[in-house]
Image (cartoon, rainbow, N blue to C red):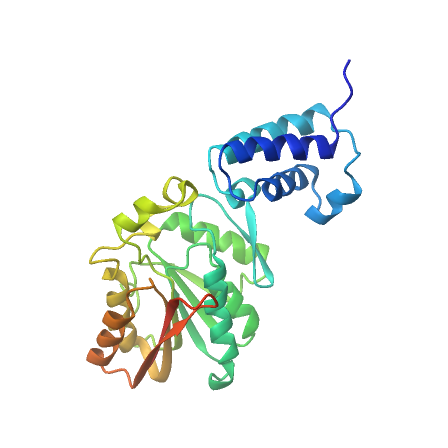
Length: 286
């Protein structure tokens, strides 16, 4: 019998394989995968590099590395991702929460002094539920409604609410944007991260995105503006006077979106850059 492979041996072999498959940050990916197999945090690995691996662990690692080599997102393989102070379960039913979307929530929280804590919040296109749950946690006296057209996404979001201990704080509704809301349903804050890519933009995206994440949550018609424009129009009718709409957007869409905000009568609207300086968010006040 040959010498048993150690954690470090497997990390190195896996990283070499992933590098050949052109996976970004191959060593980091290998470390996350082996940490997941062993049920520990990635930093704990550094104390276990000499640990020999058993065959069941090696078999699981081979499966995960093969999946990652086919460019399946790391978050789908591991089954979760951090989002602000929450751990969000991830799978093919919804988009993986992005750092830009964390920034969107942080923008809202940073300006939270302008919103009373007893707010009614609407999250449109909730997906995994990350935005709704992060806001529910930050505004503990808020009432949060989270909408998605996909019943599969709603089921995932409900799982996440339970997992985060926020199942009594968020009401999940299957709806095509505002369809299931009544005229009297008014909110202090409406937030949305809707589809905003064009089909052409998606064709240039990494395999992890275009081959694995739900296209319905990524691509919109009319140069990527279709859903954003529907939301701007509908949100005006469902915002309280002085209420705020926040949108995550594509980087070349702000001119059209701000024109739309003016047309529907918002009292003020502005485009806001993300941390990399790209125009990423729109904020409009009723």
